Length: 89
Image (cartoon, rainbow, N blue to C red; front, top):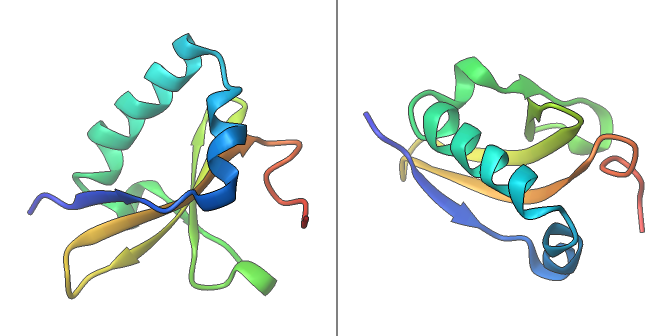
């Protein structure tokens, strides 16, 4: 089963555009090869205020996402460097 990817970065989109293009390509490839195939296997569940979300590690970057099994989609809510990803605005 192939999952569809939906980006819901909202205000975080400007942070994503600051990521160097080469790194963005690596992240995009990881999303296509891992999250589209089996997001539950490749992602680690998060806890506390992010319970219900999962994270995919791509080098020093993290992809925070939620899986909707009923609709067979992965909703990506944030992509950022590991030192900044869990900070609250």
